[in-house]
Amino acid sequence: MQLTARTFTANATDVTFNVTATTSLGTNVYVVGSLASLGSWNPADAVPLSSASYPTWSSKVIVPRPSRTAHCRLRQCAVA
Image 1: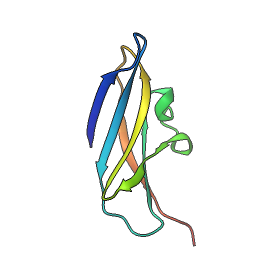
Image 2: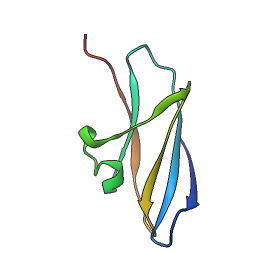
Image 3: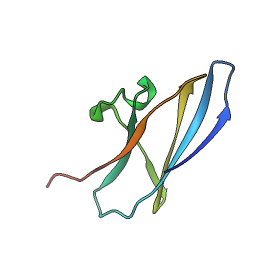
Image 4: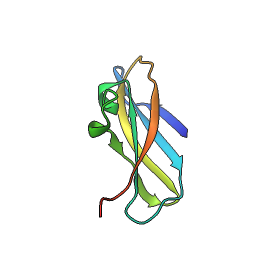
């Protein structure tokens, strides 16, 4: 997972999550983490990543400054 951050305001910054993942049709990739803007470790509130640059999935998330976070990526398969 690659992260890119830039200053957004004095109190927040936007972070871009980039994940390279080959997936099957109907499978999505999400990021979840310890911050509220990353779902507070609740998979139901995970941030969906865009497949617009497949196989790189990405999304920008605004996080408070300063902050430290732990995060992971998730894959979710479509239910038939």
